[in-house]
Image (tube, rainbow, N blue to C red; front, side, top):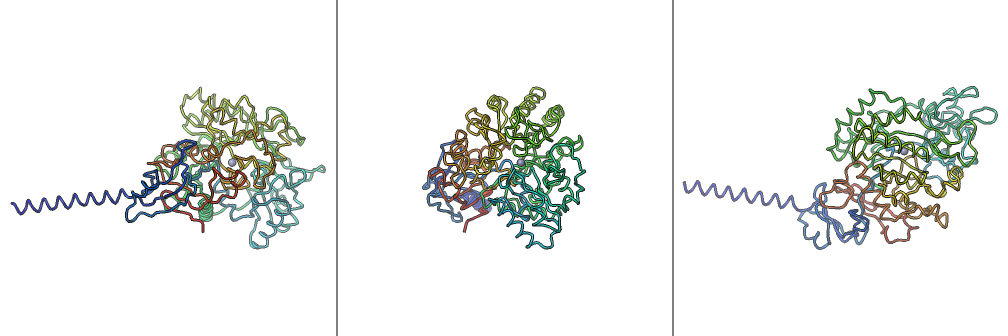
Length: 568
Ligand SMILES: [Zn+2]
C-alpha cells in the first residue's frame, strides 16, 4: 500500500510539474518589439515603448524593461531602435479584387501626364503580343484638354485589338474604335440610362463611356477563371502587406467573390482580414437579397478573418463627369445631354424603399454619395429607415462625401451615420477639373474631414483602390495633414481649413476601420487582448516635417502575430 501511495504521489507531482511547465511555456510571448514609439490608438495621445505578442494576440504593452522581462527562451525579440509603431492599416473602402486584377493590366495610376499614359500603354502592348484585349486603369481627367482623351489617341496605340482603359476613379472608360465596333456603338447608337456615350459635334462617338454606359464594352471582355482570380488576390495581398494594410472592407461584392475569400481562408492563405459588402442596384431582386443573407449568416461574425455583413449602394456618380447629384447647378458648362445638377443612379422612391428593406434585413449599408444632394438624400433615407425599423447602432456609412452642405454635417453624429472618406481623392494636382465643376461657393466644404470631425462624426479613411492614384495609406495621410501633394503643391494648401492632425488621420485609418466593421473590441488598437496586427514605419509621422510624410516606408508588417513583410 505504501509503495502504491508513493507511486501515486510521484505521479501527482509529475502531473503538477507538467501543468506548471506548459503554462509557463504558454505565458512567454512568441514575439516582442522593444525600444519603439508605439501609437496604441487607445486615444489620440496614447504612446508606449514595447509590446509583447503571444500567438496571434497582443498580451502586454508597456516600458521596454518590463516587456523584456516577459521573454522566454523561444521568444523572438525585435529592437525597434526608436521607430514608430502603429496598428495595421485598415482600408475601409476598397475594391480589392479589381485592384488585384489590375496588377496584371496596363498600370496607369502612377502616371503624371498624357505622355506617360501613352508610354505605359505602348510598353504593355509590346510586352503582351498574345493578349486579345488591352485593359487597364488609372488615367486622370486633368491630363487632357477638356478632361477627356479620345478614341483616335488610343487607336494609334492599339490599332488591331479592342482596348478598354478606365479613368483612375473607375467612372469613365476610354475605348478604341475596335472596342466601339464590337459593342455596336456608332453614330446611330442612342444610350439611355445612368451615364453617357460621349459624342462629338458631328454625332460620332469619341471613345468615352461614362458610368453604366461602360458596361456596353466591359461586358464583352472575357471573364477571368477562378484560379486567375485567386492568383490576382494573392498578388494584391502581397502588395497590401508591403504597405502595412492588415484589414480591408470591400465596397462592392458578389456571392462568387466572397467564395474566393472563403477559399483563401480555408487554405490558410489570407494575410488580410476581409469584410465583404454585397453590391446592390435597381436590378437587385428579392432572391438576390435572400442569397446575400444566407452567405452573410453562413460566414457569421465569429471569425476575425472574414465577414460579409454589409451592402453597397450608389446614389450618384462623380463630380468630374457631372454625374454627382448636386443641390445647385454645376459651376462649369454641363454637356447638354446631362442635367445641370447631376444624376441619381435610381429614382429616389426606389432608393428609399431599398434602403428601408436592406436595413430591415439587418445589414450595414454603405452608400456612395459624392454630390451634396446625394449626401442629403442618403441621410434622409437612413433617417427614415431608422424611424421605421428602429434598429440601434447600425453604423450605416456614406462613402466619399466629396461635397456637403454645411447644414447636413451635424446630422452624421445625430443619426450615428459614419463618414467614410478617402484623403487620397483630395490630392492637389488631381482636383483642378473637380474644383471648376464645384465652384468657389461650395469649395470650403470640399472633402470636409475637419468639419466632420468637429461635428463629432465618426470618420473612417480608405483608398478606394483601384479608383485612386495610390493604394498606399501613407499617401493618404500626407494629404490629410497637409492638403498638399508630395511636391508640396499648392504652397498654401488646398482648402486648408479641412486638414486634420496626424493622430486624427492615423486613427481614421486604423481604429475607426475596426469600429466600422463592429470589431473595435478585438482589433485596431495596440492593447492587451487585441489581435496582433502591427506596422513599423521608417520615420516618426508625428514629429517629421508634414511635407515629408509621403517618404515614409513600411519597415515591418505583423499580421495575426506573424511577420508577413520585412523591408530589405
Ligand atoms: Zn469605391
